[in-house]
Image (tube, rainbow, N blue to C red):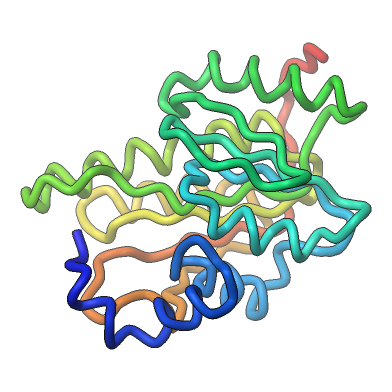
Amino acid sequence: MVKRADLKGDRFYKSAKELGYRSRSAFKLLQINTKFGLIRAGDVVLDLGAAPGGWTQVAYGLVGDNGQVLSVDLQPMENIAGIEILKSDITKEQETLTAIKTVLKLKGRAFVDVVISDLSPQLSGARDYDQFRSSVLSTSALNIASALLKNNGNFAAKIFQGAYYNEFYKCVKAKFRYTRAHSPAASRKGSAEIYVIGKGFTVRKRKDDF
């Protein structure tokens, strides 16, 4: 947990306030997208763990008028014009998938172009436990992405570095043609977070139940 006093000198926090972003983490996605080109105009983007909405705001700006953004979080999230928001626990994967598929079908879509996740567990202060909880969230994000991404789609998810990181990275690498780990400049110094990027999803045999 970052103390509010520590944010006063944070240039990304100040810039987020000035530009109307709901969180400083918006700059992480902007920096990731500049480097890797995950999101393009016209894309359909699924934002998992979206609250308070900083990544959703960035994604919405990147996809433009012809794109769509669907945001999912267990926590309440203030509406953003043009954004569909679902309240769901992504660790309940089948329940979340059913809800997402229902919305996509209503919009005439079967799959999405990009899945992004900036999910973080509530920090307990116990490093090993927090790393485990982070891996659970990241793995659920990857599982949902695997069910919903179109062929050649893109993925980005946060995970805490530690005992579970290597296995998660291997799982992403097995599903995408291009995989990299990246720490954007907006990540705080000393943070254990890292983002695993997957580009070029390779569709395995999966049940199409739309």
